[in-house]
Length: 114
Image (cartoon, rainbow, N blue to C red):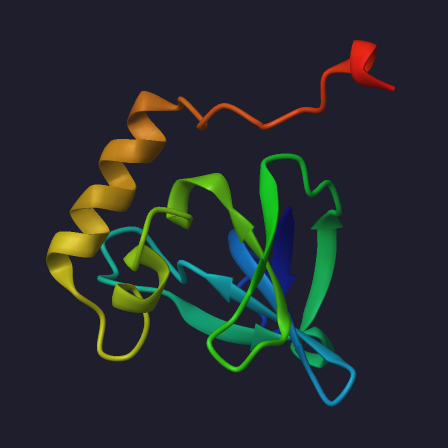
């Protein structure tokens, strides 16, 4: 998924997680190269450029609400470590995972078990 913030800079940002608060969608994005973590951009402050959620995994957040998480940040506590205050080691881990571009295997039901 990709968004364009409505801040006038006309840049496209990759979304690493989506969550909802009071019915409003929020996107966790890397605001620019070399930034050391993720920031939140709410749906009212951006335009969707690519709505595909391929590679996203549905999870429960710490408070029990649904969150869609990109496979690259789905490892243990990586997403939490990329948010305020961001952890530089976590950012290096994200970059490593993206450079390898190898998503984890998806658990799929055995079609013969129906």
